[in-house]
Image 1 (cartoon, rainbow over the protein chains, first blue to last red):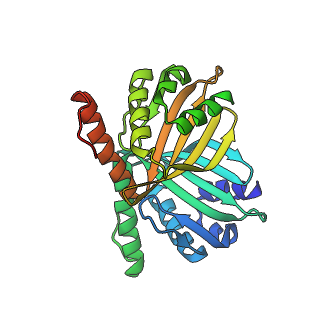
Image 2 (cartoon, chains in turn purple, brown):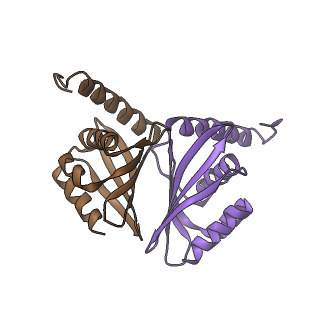
Image 3 (cartoon, rainbow over the protein chains, first blue to last red):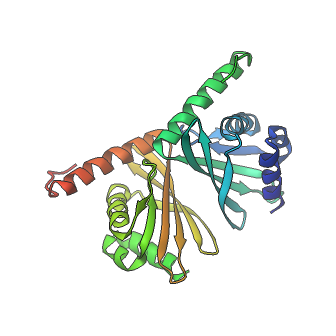
Amino acid sequence: MSGLAAWHRLISNRDPSMLADLLADDVVFHSPVVHSPQVGRARTTMYLAGAIHVLGNSSFRYVRQVCQGHNAVLEFRADIDGVEVNGVDMISFDADGRICDFTVMLRPLKGIQIVRERMAELLAAMAGGGQTSGG
Amino acid sequence: MSGLAAWHRLISNRDPSMLADLLADDVVFHSPVVHSPQVGRARTTMYLAGAIHVLGNSSFRYVRQVCQGHNAVLEFRADIDGVEVNGVDMISFDADGRICDFTVMLRPLKGIQIVRERMAELLAAMAGGGQTSGG
């Protein structure tokens, strides 16, 4: 599963630019917060790049990996300002090793709430031109 | 992984009494809502039996299964009063095929909220003697 190795490199490098080659054109992203699937590479890139920014501090680490066939489930833990976040990246790869489906789930409730809050701030800043003074 | 087959039988039969043989003495349950791990067979049985009651209507079905080694990840979908709930049961089995670790995560936020609400009602009713008039 070469796509999975590429995903791990992307996370190690905290480099969302690698998503361009790794995501299938018609990839579908399933958010931990929102019901509606987000379809296509552009929207999926926006959400995944945001998640890497919000969750990808030095505390982020994968703690369990379960792979079978074209599916990989990666469990992670991270700390955001003292709030522990535990989650899974559930990734399906197509025949070319590109990601065609990406589902994120988080626990506990406080963990979801802080990620939701930080993602909303980030997406609002991006929509407004990306000028923020920190945080 | 005979423990996994036993879990599927338990879910097919909606029969929490099968948990007695399936859970290890020192099993740990990780709730989708609460941070603190719940330790031991008694507490884990309470939460899992509650979850089977709350989520186990006719709409409940597993939609993806990813297994490797002693880990199984079972993704499910269910509908509770029109609210779609998508989640995972992440199960670790010990050398005897008994469940030693059980993590549940849910999405989207509305799905977590309705399960949390129904679980709280159920656990309160159980603590109060179990007499409820329906719902």
